Length: 358
Image (tube, rainbow, N blue to C red):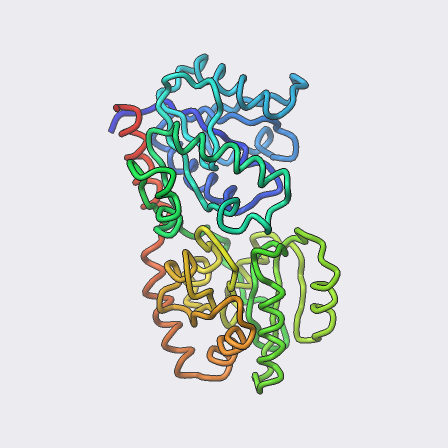
C-alpha cells in the first residue's frame, strides 16, 4: 500500500479530551506507522502535543499568529496543506476547512446531535454544527460513520461513499479493581442533558426502593452543564458516589471493579464506554434504540431511556438476577472482539487511499 502524505485536522487532540479526541488519537497513532501525517491545530496551548506528541507527525499551530481560531482553520490549514504537499485531507470531527480546492477529503461523522437533539447542545456549538456539517457532507469525497445508526441518519444529506467503521476501546493501563466497600454500577460521561443522568439517577433510586441489593452507583465524568437539581438528586442518595473527572488509570480501575456500566442516553452516535466495559467482560444497561442498542447487542439489558421504571428494571436485572447477569456478561466477552482500533485504522487507511486515488 502506497505511503501517503495526509493532512489532518488535529483539533480534537486538544484539551479537554473527549470521545472524539480518543478516536482521533487512536486512529492517528496507527496511521502514523505507515503514512506521513501533517497535523494542524488552531492552538497548541493546553494540548500537551508540543512537549509530548503521541505519535510521529509534523505538527503546525496558529497560536503564535494571534488569529481567531476559525481564521486559522479556514485559511492556514489549507495553506499548510499546500506547503506540505499533502495528498488527502482527513478530518476526524464533522467539519472541513474551506479553501482546500480540489484536494481529496475524508471526514468522520460521530453523531448528528444538532439534528436529533439540538436542545441538548449549547447555542454556539449547535450553530456551528448546523452551519458546517452539511457543507462537509457535500464536500467530502468519502465519509466515515462510527455506527450504522449514524450512517442511517446521514441518508437525507448523503448516500454515496458512506462507510460504517465502528470504534474500538482504548488500551487502558492494567489496574486493580477500584476499592469500594460495596459492588457498584458505573456511569461514564459528561453531566449533560443528552446523557440522561437525571433519568439514570431516578431509575437507580426506584430500583433501590424496589429491593436492589446493596449496590452503589459511581459517576465518573466532568461537570459539563451545571444543573442544581441534578446535583441535589446526587446528594440526596448516599448510594451514589460522584468522582468527577478521572484519569485513565482510575477509569481502568473503575471498569475492572464495576458490576456493569449504565449508558441510557437519549442519543449517542456510538457509545465508547460500552465497548470499554465489554473488553473486561462487564455487561451494561443501555438505551434500547439507536447506536447504543447497535453496539451493546445482547451484552446489555436494553431499557427505554425516557422511562425511569424501565431503567430501574435494568438495575434490578443485573443487580439481583444472577442468571441474567451471567448471560449478559458472557455476551459482553463475546462481543468485545467485534470492536478493534486496529481494524478501524485499517479500514480508514483503505478509505484514505481510495480518496487519494480517486
